[in-house]
Amino acid sequence: MLSVSAVHAAPHPDRLFPADPGARAVAQRLHRAVRNERIVSPHGHVDARLLADDEPFSDPAGLLITPDHYVTRLLHANRIPLDRLGVGRGELSEPQARAVWRSVCANWEVFRGTPVRYWFDVELAEIFGITERPSAHNADALYDRIADRLRQPDYRPRRLYERFGIDVLATTDDPCDDLSAHARLAADPAWTGRVVPTFRPDRYLEPASPGWDRSVDRLAAVSDVDTGDYDGYIEALEKRRGYFTAHGATATDHSHEDVNTHPLGAAEARRIYRAARAGSVTAAEAVAFRRHMLFEMARMSTEDGLVMMLHPAVRRNHHGPTAATFGPDTGHDLPLRVEFTDGLRPLLENFGTHPNLNLVLFTLDETTYSRDIAPLAGFYPTVFAGAPWWFLDAPDAIHRFHGAVTETAGYRKLAGFVDDTRAFCSIPARHDMARRLDAAALAHLVAEHRLGEDEAVVIAGELVREQPRRVFKL
Image (tube, one colour):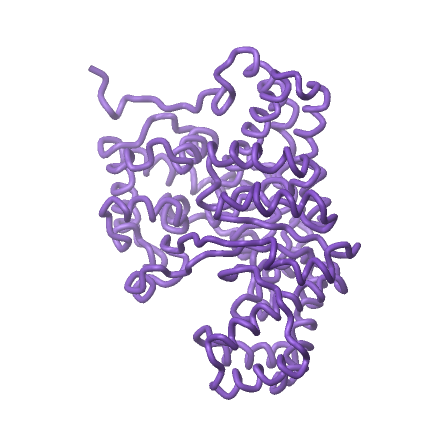
């Protein structure tokens, strides 16, 4: 009987392609046409300091496990505590990192059938040359092999960036960030890549959120604008957007519980802002102000040209005790139902045909693909369908996305793939997964004689090359 430690799990060359031989052959040809194209990553959460500092990665767990809540949440769901996985503990000692790695390998079955398993298999094989399936039996041996690689110059962040074939990488940044890491990269003659910041103003638009008043004070300090009144607050936000644009930003990103964009009258906006600064704003007023500010963000985008991404309808920090112990982004942000058609109508009635606005809509609520997003993208020239995100960033969900959106809006209204990841080494695996799934979806249309293969080759290339650059103004 074959021992677990001897099982090999090299990714199959035809993974994610159709089972039908004829359609599979078409998908193979389509994938070959795009597999070596450089990666355009217009939305993600890799820290620019990683590349600016270019320090060796500390250990396999710190690289592949602890920063990736896709990984840790599944283990936590199977009764492995987050502290055993190094979450919230900062840099780990070697024994601690090894213990985290052992926990993951000993529970490898948790990932069966998930995209996390798929990404892991590809990362381990194609980056580290490991095709042996992790288990409790081989955990230490695999740890040592990866740790040895991480000590080599070819495994430092910049060399991996080059090896991954990344053309441009967008980060996600606080409006008050000085963007010094981006500036260091831009000024470094040894650096040939492109890393651009993204303006993420959520905490400054939510008067009911803890620390909002302090955040607005900080906004005043970094912008050198008095935010004591509403007009100064607006000026400070506009000034910071300009600062980001000067440092290469092409987009903003917004993630609120809904996408309602009903504007307030000027007098009402000023009144609620005064109440918020005085600490007397009501919950209803705070929501109305945030919705007004989402409208204002679109207005600003028509003036400065920044692309507007919406990643709505997430209940952040669903489990209060985990948030209190480990902080945000630790795996317990959960999806909510959302509605786009009426919520976005004020924004789109005012700016939906504006030549400077690109609005990219993401969702965690699949019911909105065919009901809201595809019809909106199928009329408004400003609206694009964002790729499946987070819980939907999975093979079957991506197939459903293709079927729900392209029949109504067409392929030209897709924004291209976003990896949305903090896990640097998963970027090439995620993008190749998307390319394979695009090839499979297009092969299905070719096999049914609904599309010529020559056209499918063009679409596959556009989804990887032209559309992300065009939609995100890269």
